[in-house]
Length: 227
Image 1 (tube, rainbow, N blue to C red):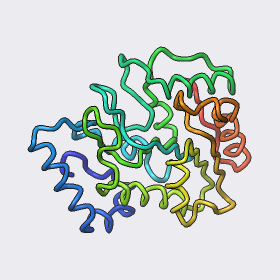
Image 2: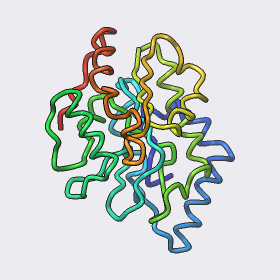
Image 3: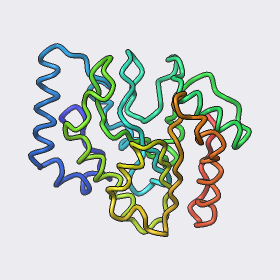
Image 4: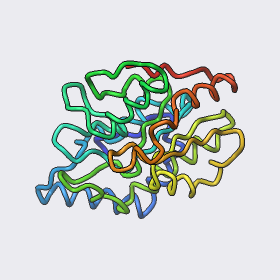
């Protein structure tokens, strides 16, 4: 991962994982896919953006995604986020709708969630790469060991944190984390914001105000969810 160095605060968390056979297999897989001419999103240098923008000691909220967007120019290393100038994807449109209903904040014209990440919202996908046009193509290739370790590290800290789990995939991942059900944390679960499931309980779940109420109650300070 020479083009994606581990940010300093996360290095102790990932040291053993990155030395494992599973991580070496992941590196070999990615190199082979690129050597075969396949396009991988996000590009090298952006794959650990979530860890870069949100140091471990600053994490207040974790929002788990499944894998990066697989269309050209969409993936930027943050779950649900796209760079400025890229059309806002349907799931993020629904996240904005719920944020507006929950907090009264207007929907922005862009999909860049970097301001959330810089405040302590870890926007982490389960797999951190994907082949162009093939959703889920890099699942179970080794990223899960790395991202599981990141979530477990947040859950193991003494600081109370919020874990926002949208959809069965995120909820299943969280179920593997030993410390995540510790009562000092707040876990907010709902259906995924995808157009296929948002009306089954995502709309009306009020994750933003619920997260802030918990953070304020525990003395960690609210997130400014405006963009």
